[in-house]
Image 1: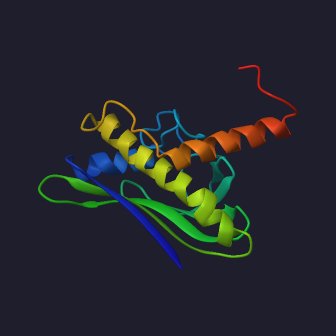
Image 2 (image 1 turned 135 degrees about the vertical axis):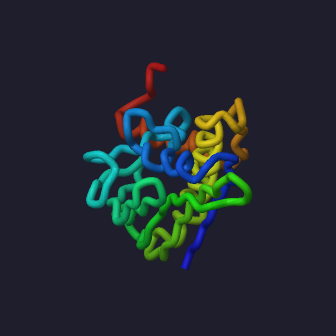
Length: 172
């Protein structure tokens, strides 16, 4: 069983943290780091039954409690069985805790693809998402963090594979 948790304390009320979650995949998404990563796209507004994903990862919204929580059940990649979710919890003082949690088992080739490819990219994306949350609220980093060398290499390799599938190098 894989349990991967990322958290960030935000010095804002729970309602402000919950509004970030509710903006996911919408026209004014203030949580997903879409400037640096493939955008999260859903076939309809965020709510139970909406389907979509980001990059090669596909999921269905399994649970959504507005202003509090959203859970996405994995549909792809092959071998991922479980979910990832965002939730906002009361924090210390007037602040809140924004948490992303991934809980899954891996099967088949995912036993290798998760630790070697997906996990480093997942961890970088989620940290960028938490940075995006802070920046959206005016309480966080002004500049994006530098990714580890492994993440930069994996992103370069993924771009090269995508270009190869399109039949050649990109003109840009």
